[in-house]
Length: 604
Image (spheres, rainbow, N blue to C red):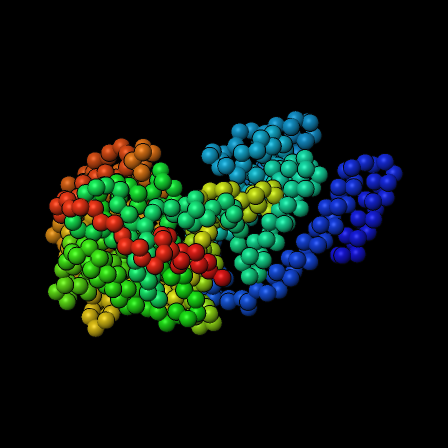
Protein backbone atom coordinates (compact mmCIF):
# COMPACT_ATOMS: atom_id res chain seq x y z
CA UNK A 1 0.00 0.00 0.00
CA UNK A 2 2.82 2.39 0.87
CA UNK A 3 4.47 1.79 -2.55
CA UNK A 4 1.15 2.54 -4.27
CA UNK A 5 0.80 5.82 -2.38
CA UNK A 6 4.38 6.80 -3.25
CA UNK A 7 3.82 6.04 -6.95
CA UNK A 8 0.60 8.09 -6.91
CA UNK A 9 2.45 11.00 -5.31
CA UNK A 10 5.19 10.82 -8.00
CA UNK A 11 2.58 10.72 -10.77
CA UNK A 12 0.78 13.76 -9.36
CA UNK A 13 4.09 15.60 -9.06
CA UNK A 14 4.74 14.98 -12.75
CA UNK A 15 1.22 16.21 -13.56
CA UNK A 16 1.89 19.40 -11.61
CA UNK A 17 5.09 19.89 -13.57
CA UNK A 18 3.26 19.54 -16.91
CA UNK A 19 0.75 22.29 -16.28
CA UNK A 20 -2.04 20.51 -14.46
CA UNK A 21 -1.76 23.20 -11.86
CA UNK A 22 -2.41 23.43 -8.15
CA UNK A 23 -5.00 20.64 -8.05
CA UNK A 24 -2.49 17.87 -8.78
CA UNK A 25 0.02 19.44 -6.40
CA UNK A 26 -2.51 19.61 -3.61
CA UNK A 27 -3.62 16.03 -4.20
CA UNK A 28 0.00 14.87 -4.07
CA UNK A 29 0.49 16.69 -0.78
CA UNK A 30 -2.68 15.14 0.60
CA UNK A 31 -1.51 11.65 -0.34
CA UNK A 32 1.74 12.26 1.54
CA UNK A 33 -0.24 13.46 4.55
CA UNK A 34 -2.45 10.37 4.35
CA UNK A 35 0.64 8.16 4.35
CA UNK A 36 1.97 9.82 7.52
CA UNK A 37 -1.43 9.73 9.18
CA UNK A 38 -1.85 6.07 8.27
CA UNK A 39 1.40 5.22 10.05
CA UNK A 40 0.30 7.20 13.11
CA UNK A 41 -3.07 5.44 13.08
CA UNK A 42 -1.48 1.99 13.03
CA UNK A 43 0.80 3.02 15.88
CA UNK A 44 -2.16 4.35 17.87
CA UNK A 45 -4.13 1.13 17.37
CA UNK A 46 -1.12 -0.94 18.42
CA UNK A 47 -1.29 0.31 22.03
CA UNK A 48 -4.88 -0.84 22.48
CA UNK A 49 -5.23 -3.37 25.28
CA UNK A 50 -6.41 -6.87 24.44
CA UNK A 51 -10.11 -6.81 23.53
CA UNK A 52 -12.65 -8.21 25.96
CA UNK A 53 -15.21 -10.17 23.90
CA UNK A 54 -17.68 -10.02 26.79
CA UNK A 55 -18.21 -6.28 26.34
CA UNK A 56 -17.75 -6.07 22.57
CA UNK A 57 -21.18 -7.44 21.73
CA UNK A 58 -23.95 -9.86 22.73
CA UNK A 59 -22.95 -13.31 23.92
CA UNK A 60 -23.48 -16.57 22.08
CA UNK A 61 -26.67 -17.28 24.03
CA UNK A 62 -28.50 -14.43 22.26
CA UNK A 63 -27.53 -15.73 18.81
CA UNK A 64 -28.53 -19.27 19.80
CA UNK A 65 -31.88 -17.97 21.05
CA UNK A 66 -32.47 -16.03 17.83
CA UNK A 67 -31.42 -19.00 15.66
CA UNK A 68 -33.67 -21.36 17.58
CA UNK A 69 -36.59 -18.94 17.24
CA UNK A 70 -35.95 -18.63 13.50
CA UNK A 71 -35.95 -22.39 13.01
CA UNK A 72 -39.10 -22.74 15.11
CA UNK A 73 -40.89 -20.03 13.11
CA UNK A 74 -39.73 -21.57 9.83
CA UNK A 75 -40.99 -25.00 10.89
CA UNK A 76 -44.34 -23.87 12.28
CA UNK A 77 -45.14 -21.07 9.82
CA UNK A 78 -43.32 -21.77 6.53
CA UNK A 79 -45.96 -19.97 4.44
CA UNK A 80 -45.54 -16.77 6.44
CA UNK A 81 -41.76 -16.90 6.05
CA UNK A 82 -42.09 -17.48 2.31
CA UNK A 83 -44.57 -14.62 1.99
CA UNK A 84 -42.14 -12.30 3.78
CA UNK A 85 -39.32 -13.30 1.42
CA UNK A 86 -41.44 -12.87 -1.70
CA UNK A 87 -42.58 -9.44 -0.54
CA UNK A 88 -38.98 -8.41 0.14
CA UNK A 89 -37.71 -9.49 -3.28
CA UNK A 90 -40.67 -7.89 -5.03
CA UNK A 91 -39.99 -4.56 -3.36
CA UNK A 92 -36.28 -4.84 -4.15
CA UNK A 93 -36.98 -5.47 -7.85
CA UNK A 94 -39.41 -2.53 -7.88
CA UNK A 95 -36.75 -0.22 -6.45
CA UNK A 96 -34.26 -1.37 -9.09
CA UNK A 97 -36.75 -1.11 -11.94
CA UNK A 98 -37.71 2.47 -11.06
CA UNK A 99 -34.06 3.48 -10.91
CA UNK A 100 -33.38 1.86 -14.31
CA UNK A 101 -36.33 3.66 -15.90
CA UNK A 102 -35.21 7.00 -14.50
CA UNK A 103 -31.69 6.50 -15.88
CA UNK A 104 -32.96 5.33 -19.27
CA UNK A 105 -35.20 8.39 -19.64
CA UNK A 106 -32.55 10.76 -18.33
CA UNK A 107 -35.09 11.81 -15.75
CA UNK A 108 -33.04 12.67 -12.70
CA UNK A 109 -35.94 12.78 -10.31
CA UNK A 110 -37.63 10.34 -7.98
CA UNK A 111 -40.93 10.08 -6.12
CA UNK A 112 -41.34 11.67 -2.74
CA UNK A 113 -39.56 9.88 0.08
CA UNK A 114 -41.15 7.85 2.85
CA UNK A 115 -38.70 8.75 5.61
CA UNK A 116 -40.16 12.01 6.98
CA UNK A 117 -37.98 13.75 9.53
CA UNK A 118 -34.94 11.50 8.98
CA UNK A 119 -32.14 14.04 8.95
CA UNK A 120 -29.72 11.47 7.55
CA UNK A 121 -31.43 11.88 4.17
CA UNK A 122 -31.72 15.67 4.08
CA UNK A 123 -29.45 16.09 1.03
CA UNK A 124 -31.66 16.69 -2.07
CA UNK A 125 -29.63 14.12 -4.01
CA UNK A 126 -31.27 11.35 -1.99
CA UNK A 127 -34.47 12.39 -3.72
CA UNK A 128 -33.39 13.74 -7.09
CA UNK A 129 -30.60 11.37 -8.17
CA UNK A 130 -31.62 7.81 -9.20
CA UNK A 131 -28.39 6.28 -7.83
CA UNK A 132 -28.73 7.74 -4.37
CA UNK A 133 -32.48 7.33 -4.37
CA UNK A 134 -32.10 3.62 -5.17
CA UNK A 135 -29.58 3.22 -2.33
CA UNK A 136 -31.89 4.99 0.09
CA UNK A 137 -34.98 3.05 -1.00
CA UNK A 138 -33.17 -0.26 -0.79
CA UNK A 139 -31.77 0.58 2.65
CA UNK A 140 -35.26 1.39 3.93
CA UNK A 141 -36.54 -1.84 2.36
CA UNK A 142 -33.78 -3.85 4.03
CA UNK A 143 -34.38 -2.13 7.38
CA UNK A 144 -38.10 -2.83 7.24
CA UNK A 145 -37.49 -6.46 6.25
CA UNK A 146 -35.05 -7.00 9.11
CA UNK A 147 -37.39 -5.50 11.68
CA UNK A 148 -40.38 -7.46 10.40
CA UNK A 149 -38.38 -10.69 10.40
CA UNK A 150 -37.25 -10.04 13.97
CA UNK A 151 -40.76 -9.19 15.11
CA UNK A 152 -42.10 -12.51 13.77
CA UNK A 153 -39.66 -14.63 15.78
CA UNK A 154 -41.29 -16.64 18.54
CA UNK A 155 -38.97 -15.78 21.41
CA UNK A 156 -39.11 -17.34 24.90
CA UNK A 157 -39.61 -14.18 26.95
CA UNK A 158 -39.64 -10.38 27.01
CA UNK A 159 -35.94 -10.18 27.79
CA UNK A 160 -35.08 -12.10 24.62
CA UNK A 161 -37.52 -9.91 22.67
CA UNK A 162 -35.89 -6.69 23.85
CA UNK A 163 -32.39 -8.01 23.17
CA UNK A 164 -33.22 -9.17 19.63
CA UNK A 165 -34.98 -5.87 18.87
CA UNK A 166 -32.00 -3.93 20.24
CA UNK A 167 -29.50 -5.92 18.14
CA UNK A 168 -31.67 -5.57 15.04
CA UNK A 169 -31.82 -1.80 15.46
CA UNK A 170 -28.05 -1.63 15.96
CA UNK A 171 -27.50 -3.52 12.68
CA UNK A 172 -30.01 -1.31 10.85
CA UNK A 173 -28.38 1.89 12.12
CA UNK A 174 -24.85 0.65 11.42
CA UNK A 175 -25.63 -0.28 7.80
CA UNK A 176 -27.13 3.10 6.87
CA UNK A 177 -25.67 4.30 3.54
CA UNK A 178 -24.72 7.59 5.15
CA UNK A 179 -22.08 5.70 7.16
CA UNK A 180 -20.06 4.88 4.03
CA UNK A 181 -18.15 7.35 1.87
CA UNK A 182 -19.21 5.89 -1.49
CA UNK A 183 -22.90 6.25 -0.60
CA UNK A 184 -22.87 9.53 1.30
CA UNK A 185 -23.52 12.45 -1.07
CA UNK A 186 -22.67 15.06 1.58
CA UNK A 187 -19.22 13.59 2.14
CA UNK A 188 -18.57 13.10 -1.59
CA UNK A 189 -19.57 16.68 -2.41
CA UNK A 190 -17.38 17.97 0.40
CA UNK A 191 -14.42 15.91 -0.81
CA UNK A 192 -14.76 17.27 -4.36
CA UNK A 193 -15.22 20.86 -3.19
CA UNK A 194 -12.11 20.69 -0.99
CA UNK A 195 -10.01 18.61 -3.44
CA UNK A 196 -9.77 15.83 -0.88
CA UNK A 197 -8.85 18.12 2.01
CA UNK A 198 -11.98 17.15 3.98
CA UNK A 199 -10.99 13.47 3.89
CA UNK A 200 -7.49 14.26 5.10
CA UNK A 201 -8.89 16.37 7.95
CA UNK A 202 -11.24 13.51 8.74
CA UNK A 203 -8.31 11.11 8.96
CA UNK A 204 -6.53 13.60 11.21
CA UNK A 205 -9.60 13.66 13.46
CA UNK A 206 -9.68 9.86 13.54
CA UNK A 207 -5.99 9.61 14.44
CA UNK A 208 -6.46 12.21 17.17
CA UNK A 209 -9.36 10.30 18.73
CA UNK A 210 -7.59 6.93 18.64
CA UNK A 211 -4.40 8.40 20.11
CA UNK A 212 -6.35 10.23 22.80
CA UNK A 213 -8.28 7.11 23.83
CA UNK A 214 -5.46 4.59 24.15
CA UNK A 215 -6.10 2.78 20.88
CA UNK A 216 -9.89 2.85 21.14
CA UNK A 217 -11.96 4.55 18.46
CA UNK A 218 -14.16 6.96 20.42
CA UNK A 219 -15.38 9.95 18.44
CA UNK A 220 -14.92 13.36 20.09
CA UNK A 221 -18.28 15.03 20.57
CA UNK A 222 -16.94 18.48 21.50
CA UNK A 223 -13.85 20.63 21.20
CA UNK A 224 -11.81 19.92 24.31
CA UNK A 225 -9.87 23.17 23.95
CA UNK A 226 -12.96 25.38 23.95
CA UNK A 227 -13.71 25.04 27.66
CA UNK A 228 -11.82 24.98 30.92
CA UNK A 229 -13.56 24.10 34.17
CA UNK A 230 -13.22 26.99 36.57
CA UNK A 231 -12.48 29.38 33.70
CA UNK A 232 -15.52 29.59 31.40
CA UNK A 233 -17.67 26.79 32.88
CA UNK A 234 -18.10 25.71 36.49
CA UNK A 235 -17.32 29.21 37.73
CA UNK A 236 -19.68 29.72 40.69
CA UNK A 237 -17.53 31.17 43.51
CA UNK A 238 -16.89 29.01 46.55
CA UNK A 239 -14.28 27.08 48.50
CA UNK A 240 -13.24 23.47 48.98
CA UNK A 241 -13.90 23.19 52.71
CA UNK A 242 -13.09 19.50 53.12
CA UNK A 243 -11.20 16.87 51.16
CA UNK A 244 -11.31 13.09 51.56
CA UNK A 245 -9.89 10.29 49.40
CA UNK A 246 -13.24 9.86 47.65
CA UNK A 247 -14.58 13.42 47.40
CA UNK A 248 -14.10 17.14 47.88
CA UNK A 249 -16.78 19.17 49.63
CA UNK A 250 -17.45 22.60 48.12
CA UNK A 251 -19.31 25.39 49.89
CA UNK A 252 -20.52 28.22 47.69
CA UNK A 253 -20.53 31.87 48.64
CA UNK A 254 -23.95 33.38 49.45
CA UNK A 255 -25.80 35.49 46.90
CA UNK A 256 -28.25 37.01 49.43
CA UNK A 257 -27.88 38.79 52.75
CA UNK A 258 -30.18 36.30 54.48
CA UNK A 259 -30.28 32.54 53.96
CA UNK A 260 -32.43 29.66 55.12
CA UNK A 261 -31.23 28.12 58.36
CA UNK A 262 -31.02 24.55 57.04
CA UNK A 263 -28.19 24.01 54.55
CA UNK A 264 -28.78 22.36 51.18
CA UNK A 265 -26.45 19.59 50.04
CA UNK A 266 -26.23 18.18 46.49
CA UNK A 267 -24.82 14.75 45.69
CA UNK A 268 -24.12 14.58 41.93
CA UNK A 269 -23.54 11.25 40.14
CA UNK A 270 -19.96 9.99 40.12
CA UNK A 271 -20.60 8.58 36.65
CA UNK A 272 -20.17 12.20 35.49
CA UNK A 273 -18.87 15.43 37.02
CA UNK A 274 -20.80 17.90 39.11
CA UNK A 275 -20.40 20.97 36.90
CA UNK A 276 -23.36 19.92 34.74
CA UNK A 277 -25.24 21.98 37.36
CA UNK A 278 -22.96 24.98 36.73
CA UNK A 279 -22.12 25.06 33.02
CA UNK A 280 -22.79 28.76 32.45
CA UNK A 281 -24.18 31.48 34.75
CA UNK A 282 -27.42 31.67 32.75
CA UNK A 283 -28.25 27.96 33.15
CA UNK A 284 -26.51 27.25 36.45
CA UNK A 285 -28.74 25.56 38.99
CA UNK A 286 -26.08 26.23 41.60
CA UNK A 287 -26.31 30.00 41.07
CA UNK A 288 -30.11 29.85 40.98
CA UNK A 289 -30.26 28.03 44.32
CA UNK A 290 -27.91 30.61 45.84
CA UNK A 291 -30.24 33.34 44.58
CA UNK A 292 -33.09 31.57 46.42
CA UNK A 293 -31.26 32.05 49.70
CA UNK A 294 -29.72 28.65 50.38
CA UNK A 295 -26.39 27.83 51.98
CA UNK A 296 -25.28 25.42 49.29
CA UNK A 297 -22.79 22.56 49.41
CA UNK A 298 -21.92 20.12 46.64
CA UNK A 299 -19.77 17.01 46.50
CA UNK A 300 -17.09 16.74 43.80
CA UNK A 301 -16.20 13.07 43.43
CA UNK A 302 -12.76 11.63 42.88
CA UNK A 303 -12.20 10.22 39.39
CA UNK A 304 -10.97 6.82 40.55
CA UNK A 305 -7.89 4.98 39.40
CA UNK A 306 -6.90 1.38 40.13
CA UNK A 307 -6.01 2.35 43.71
CA UNK A 308 -9.74 2.71 44.42
CA UNK A 309 -10.76 -0.55 42.75
CA UNK A 310 -12.03 -2.05 46.04
CA UNK A 311 -14.19 0.98 46.83
CA UNK A 312 -17.75 -0.25 47.23
CA UNK A 313 -21.24 1.14 47.62
CA UNK A 314 -20.73 1.09 51.39
CA UNK A 315 -17.78 3.48 50.96
CA UNK A 316 -19.94 5.92 49.02
CA UNK A 317 -22.64 5.75 51.69
CA UNK A 318 -19.97 6.36 54.34
CA UNK A 319 -18.82 9.38 52.30
CA UNK A 320 -22.40 10.70 52.28
CA UNK A 321 -22.56 10.47 56.06
CA UNK A 322 -19.13 12.03 56.55
CA UNK A 323 -19.92 14.92 54.20
CA UNK A 324 -23.24 15.50 55.99
CA UNK A 325 -21.42 15.64 59.32
CA UNK A 326 -19.02 18.22 57.95
CA UNK A 327 -21.88 20.36 56.60
CA UNK A 328 -23.71 20.23 59.93
CA UNK A 329 -20.53 21.25 61.76
CA UNK A 330 -19.87 24.16 59.38
CA UNK A 331 -23.42 25.51 59.67
CA UNK A 332 -24.09 24.58 63.30
CA UNK A 333 -27.30 22.81 62.27
CA UNK A 334 -28.56 19.40 63.31
CA UNK A 335 -30.42 18.83 60.04
CA UNK A 336 -29.99 19.52 56.33
CA UNK A 337 -31.85 19.05 53.05
CA UNK A 338 -30.28 16.68 50.53
CA UNK A 339 -30.43 16.25 46.75
CA UNK A 340 -29.31 13.19 44.78
CA UNK A 341 -28.98 13.08 40.99
CA UNK A 342 -29.17 9.78 39.05
CA UNK A 343 -27.00 7.09 40.70
CA UNK A 344 -26.29 9.55 43.51
CA UNK A 345 -30.04 9.65 44.10
CA UNK A 346 -30.11 5.86 44.28
CA UNK A 347 -27.34 5.99 46.87
CA UNK A 348 -29.07 8.82 48.74
CA UNK A 349 -32.13 6.56 49.04
CA UNK A 350 -29.91 3.78 50.46
CA UNK A 351 -28.38 6.28 52.87
CA UNK A 352 -31.81 7.46 54.02
CA UNK A 353 -32.90 3.85 54.57
CA UNK A 354 -29.75 3.26 56.65
CA UNK A 355 -30.38 6.41 58.71
CA UNK A 356 -33.95 5.24 59.34
CA UNK A 357 -32.62 1.92 60.63
CA UNK A 358 -30.24 3.78 62.93
CA UNK A 359 -32.84 6.25 64.15
CA UNK A 360 -30.82 9.19 62.77
CA UNK A 361 -32.94 12.15 61.57
CA UNK A 362 -30.18 14.38 60.19
CA UNK A 363 -31.91 14.66 56.77
CA UNK A 364 -34.96 16.89 56.93
CA UNK A 365 -36.06 16.35 53.32
CA UNK A 366 -34.73 14.67 50.19
CA UNK A 367 -34.97 15.51 46.50
CA UNK A 368 -34.30 12.97 43.76
CA UNK A 369 -33.36 13.97 40.22
CA UNK A 370 -33.94 11.26 37.55
CA UNK A 371 -33.37 8.52 40.12
CA UNK A 372 -34.00 4.79 39.77
CA UNK A 373 -34.54 2.67 42.88
CA UNK A 374 -36.80 -0.08 41.51
CA UNK A 375 -35.17 -1.96 38.62
CA UNK A 376 -37.96 -4.48 37.96
CA UNK A 377 -38.21 -3.10 34.41
CA UNK A 378 -34.74 -2.71 32.90
CA UNK A 379 -36.01 -0.90 29.82
CA UNK A 380 -33.42 0.01 27.21
CA UNK A 381 -30.65 -1.35 29.42
CA UNK A 382 -32.02 -4.89 29.19
CA UNK A 383 -29.36 -5.91 26.66
CA UNK A 384 -26.58 -4.67 28.94
CA UNK A 385 -27.90 -6.18 32.19
CA UNK A 386 -27.88 -9.84 31.23
CA UNK A 387 -25.30 -12.29 32.53
CA UNK A 388 -23.18 -12.37 29.37
CA UNK A 389 -22.53 -8.63 29.33
CA UNK A 390 -22.26 -8.30 33.12
CA UNK A 391 -19.77 -11.18 33.12
CA UNK A 392 -17.80 -9.25 30.51
CA UNK A 393 -17.76 -6.24 32.82
CA UNK A 394 -16.59 -8.49 35.66
CA UNK A 395 -13.69 -9.57 33.45
CA UNK A 396 -12.99 -5.91 32.67
CA UNK A 397 -12.91 -5.15 36.39
CA UNK A 398 -10.59 -8.11 37.00
CA UNK A 399 -8.18 -6.79 34.36
CA UNK A 400 -8.19 -3.12 35.28
CA UNK A 401 -9.80 -2.79 38.71
CA UNK A 402 -12.27 -0.36 37.14
CA UNK A 403 -15.22 -0.04 34.84
CA UNK A 404 -13.28 2.30 32.60
CA UNK A 405 -14.80 5.53 31.38
CA UNK A 406 -14.60 4.81 27.65
CA UNK A 407 -16.55 1.56 28.04
CA UNK A 408 -19.27 3.27 30.06
CA UNK A 409 -19.45 6.14 27.53
CA UNK A 410 -19.62 3.74 24.60
CA UNK A 411 -22.40 1.73 26.21
CA UNK A 412 -24.48 4.84 26.89
CA UNK A 413 -23.83 6.20 23.40
CA UNK A 414 -25.19 3.10 21.68
CA UNK A 415 -28.55 3.72 23.33
CA UNK A 416 -28.77 6.61 20.85
CA UNK A 417 -26.36 5.42 18.18
CA UNK A 418 -27.41 7.72 15.32
CA UNK A 419 -27.10 10.84 17.46
CA UNK A 420 -24.07 9.93 19.56
CA UNK A 421 -22.03 7.54 17.40
CA UNK A 422 -22.73 7.48 13.66
CA UNK A 423 -23.73 11.12 13.20
CA UNK A 424 -20.68 12.55 15.00
CA UNK A 425 -18.40 10.03 13.24
CA UNK A 426 -19.70 11.10 9.82
CA UNK A 427 -19.18 14.78 10.57
CA UNK A 428 -15.73 14.23 12.04
CA UNK A 429 -14.21 11.47 9.90
CA UNK A 430 -15.93 11.83 6.51
CA UNK A 431 -16.73 15.55 6.42
CA UNK A 432 -13.54 16.57 8.23
CA UNK A 433 -15.37 18.93 10.58
CA UNK A 434 -13.90 20.01 13.89
CA UNK A 435 -15.90 18.99 16.97
CA UNK A 436 -18.30 21.76 18.05
CA UNK A 437 -17.61 24.10 20.94
CA UNK A 438 -20.66 22.94 22.91
CA UNK A 439 -20.44 22.99 26.70
CA UNK A 440 -22.95 20.19 27.28
CA UNK A 441 -21.11 17.83 24.91
CA UNK A 442 -17.79 18.86 26.47
CA UNK A 443 -19.15 17.80 29.87
CA UNK A 444 -20.52 14.59 28.36
CA UNK A 445 -17.03 13.73 27.10
CA UNK A 446 -15.36 14.52 30.44
CA UNK A 447 -15.97 10.97 31.58
CA UNK A 448 -15.16 9.21 34.83
CA UNK A 449 -14.13 5.69 35.76
CA UNK A 450 -16.15 3.61 38.21
CA UNK A 451 -14.52 1.58 41.00
CA UNK A 452 -14.74 -2.08 40.11
CA UNK A 453 -16.31 -3.26 43.37
CA UNK A 454 -18.98 -0.55 43.36
CA UNK A 455 -19.84 -1.16 39.69
CA UNK A 456 -20.43 -4.87 40.25
CA UNK A 457 -22.44 -4.28 43.43
CA UNK A 458 -24.63 -1.86 41.51
CA UNK A 459 -25.09 -4.16 38.51
CA UNK A 460 -25.62 -7.39 40.45
CA UNK A 461 -27.36 -6.27 43.63
CA UNK A 462 -29.40 -3.27 42.51
CA UNK A 463 -30.00 -3.75 38.77
CA UNK A 464 -30.11 -7.51 38.24
CA UNK A 465 -31.43 -8.69 41.62
CA UNK A 466 -33.42 -5.50 42.32
CA UNK A 467 -32.63 -6.16 45.98
CA UNK A 468 -33.49 -2.68 47.30
CA UNK A 469 -37.07 -2.99 46.02
CA UNK A 470 -37.44 -6.70 46.83
CA UNK A 471 -35.65 -8.69 49.54
CA UNK A 472 -33.41 -5.85 50.74
CA UNK A 473 -29.94 -4.60 49.89
CA UNK A 474 -27.38 -5.67 52.49
CA UNK A 475 -24.93 -2.93 53.45
CA UNK A 476 -23.13 -1.82 56.62
CA UNK A 477 -24.81 -4.45 58.78
CA UNK A 478 -28.37 -3.68 57.70
CA UNK A 479 -30.77 -5.01 55.09
CA UNK A 480 -32.22 -1.90 53.48
CA UNK A 481 -35.60 -1.65 51.76
CA UNK A 482 -37.28 1.06 49.72
CA UNK A 483 -39.98 1.25 52.34
CA UNK A 484 -37.35 2.45 54.83
CA UNK A 485 -37.13 5.80 53.01
CA UNK A 486 -39.52 7.88 55.13
CA UNK A 487 -38.36 11.51 55.02
CA UNK A 488 -40.47 14.05 53.09
CA UNK A 489 -39.36 13.83 49.48
CA UNK A 490 -39.70 15.42 46.08
CA UNK A 491 -38.77 13.51 42.91
CA UNK A 492 -38.21 14.98 39.47
CA UNK A 493 -38.24 12.71 36.43
CA UNK A 494 -38.03 13.57 32.73
CA UNK A 495 -40.55 12.61 30.08
CA UNK A 496 -38.14 11.40 27.36
CA UNK A 497 -35.35 10.19 29.66
CA UNK A 498 -33.86 7.01 28.15
CA UNK A 499 -31.42 6.46 31.04
CA UNK A 500 -33.90 6.71 33.92
CA UNK A 501 -37.37 6.38 32.32
CA UNK A 502 -39.91 8.41 34.24
CA UNK A 503 -42.32 5.50 34.80
CA UNK A 504 -39.52 3.53 36.47
CA UNK A 505 -38.53 6.51 38.59
CA UNK A 506 -42.20 6.92 39.55
CA UNK A 507 -42.44 3.25 40.54
CA UNK A 508 -39.46 3.59 42.88
CA UNK A 509 -40.99 6.62 44.59
CA UNK A 510 -44.29 4.76 44.93
CA UNK A 511 -42.46 2.04 46.85
CA UNK A 512 -40.86 4.43 49.34
CA UNK A 513 -42.30 4.64 52.84
CA UNK A 514 -42.56 8.44 53.06
CA UNK A 515 -45.99 9.80 53.91
CA UNK A 516 -45.21 13.07 52.13
CA UNK A 517 -44.24 12.52 48.49
CA UNK A 518 -44.26 14.96 45.58
CA UNK A 519 -43.58 13.88 42.00
CA UNK A 520 -42.83 16.31 39.16
CA UNK A 521 -42.50 15.22 35.53
CA UNK A 522 -40.43 17.56 33.38
CA UNK A 523 -40.46 17.60 29.62
CA UNK A 524 -37.29 16.58 27.73
CA UNK A 525 -34.53 14.15 28.74
CA UNK A 526 -32.05 13.12 31.41
CA UNK A 527 -30.01 16.35 31.26
CA UNK A 528 -32.08 18.98 29.44
CA UNK A 529 -35.11 18.21 31.60
CA UNK A 530 -33.11 18.90 34.77
CA UNK A 531 -30.91 21.76 33.56
CA UNK A 532 -33.98 23.78 32.60
CA UNK A 533 -33.71 27.29 34.08
CA UNK A 534 -36.82 29.48 34.31
CA UNK A 535 -35.22 32.14 32.10
CA UNK A 536 -35.19 29.78 29.10
CA UNK A 537 -38.96 29.23 29.13
CA UNK A 538 -38.28 26.09 27.12
CA UNK A 539 -39.73 22.97 28.74
CA UNK A 540 -42.86 22.63 30.81
CA UNK A 541 -43.75 20.11 33.52
CA UNK A 542 -46.57 17.99 34.91
CA UNK A 543 -47.87 17.70 38.46
CA UNK A 544 -50.75 15.64 39.83
CA UNK A 545 -52.78 15.39 43.01
CA UNK A 546 -53.14 11.65 42.44
CA UNK A 547 -51.47 9.48 45.03
CA UNK A 548 -49.17 6.57 44.21
CA UNK A 549 -51.76 3.81 44.49
CA UNK A 550 -53.03 3.58 40.91
CA UNK A 551 -49.96 3.31 38.68
CA UNK A 552 -47.98 5.77 36.59
CA UNK A 553 -50.49 5.87 33.73
CA UNK A 554 -53.28 7.07 36.04
CA UNK A 555 -50.91 9.61 37.55
CA UNK A 556 -50.12 11.02 34.10
CA UNK A 557 -53.78 11.05 33.04
CA UNK A 558 -54.75 13.10 36.09
CA UNK A 559 -51.72 15.41 35.89
CA UNK A 560 -51.95 19.04 34.89
CA UNK A 561 -49.43 20.59 32.54
CA UNK A 562 -47.66 23.84 33.39
CA UNK A 563 -45.53 25.94 31.05
CA UNK A 564 -41.99 26.73 32.06
CA UNK A 565 -39.39 25.23 34.34
CA UNK A 566 -40.16 23.12 37.38
CA UNK A 567 -37.41 24.92 39.33
CA UNK A 568 -39.70 27.56 40.93
CA UNK A 569 -42.22 24.90 41.99
CA UNK A 570 -39.45 22.86 43.62
CA UNK A 571 -37.99 26.08 45.08
CA UNK A 572 -41.26 26.74 46.90
CA UNK A 573 -41.38 23.15 48.17
CA UNK A 574 -37.80 23.41 49.38
CA UNK A 575 -38.24 26.81 51.03
CA UNK A 576 -41.08 25.44 53.17
CA UNK A 577 -38.65 22.87 54.59
CA UNK A 578 -35.52 24.99 54.87
CA UNK A 579 -36.23 26.83 58.11
CA UNK A 580 -36.23 30.49 59.11
CA UNK A 581 -33.99 33.10 57.52
CA UNK A 582 -30.64 33.80 59.21
CA UNK A 583 -27.57 35.86 58.35
CA UNK A 584 -25.76 34.60 55.28
CA UNK A 585 -22.84 32.23 55.82
CA UNK A 586 -19.59 32.97 54.04
CA UNK A 587 -17.43 29.89 53.49
CA UNK A 588 -14.09 29.72 55.23
CA UNK A 589 -10.98 30.13 53.12
CA UNK A 590 -10.75 26.37 52.85
CA UNK A 591 -8.22 24.28 50.98
CA UNK A 592 -8.58 26.04 47.61
CA UNK A 593 -11.19 27.91 45.57
CA UNK A 594 -14.02 26.12 43.81
CA UNK A 595 -14.25 24.06 41.67
CA UNK A 596 -11.37 22.29 43.44
CA UNK A 597 -8.85 19.74 42.18
CA UNK A 598 -10.75 16.48 41.75
CA UNK A 599 -12.91 17.88 38.96
CA UNK A 600 -9.83 18.39 36.77
CA UNK A 601 -8.76 14.74 36.90
CA UNK A 602 -9.49 13.05 33.58
CA UNK A 603 -10.02 9.36 33.03
CA UNK A 604 -6.86 7.96 31.45
